[in-house]
Length: 50
Image (cartoon, rainbow, N blue to C red; front, top):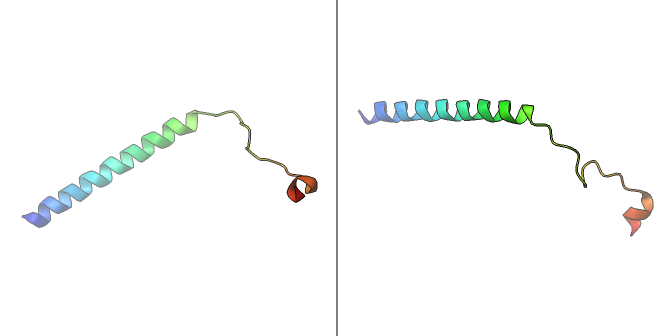
């Protein structure tokens, strides 16, 4: 009986995680964030030496 409960618990947890992952992906895909400071920073040689 313990093995059956454990398997059911594992399947339920897997289903919850997959559902949450799909929902997170769909919500994050639609949300476009603007570029902020520090993103894709280009450094010159003088800045590297400083």
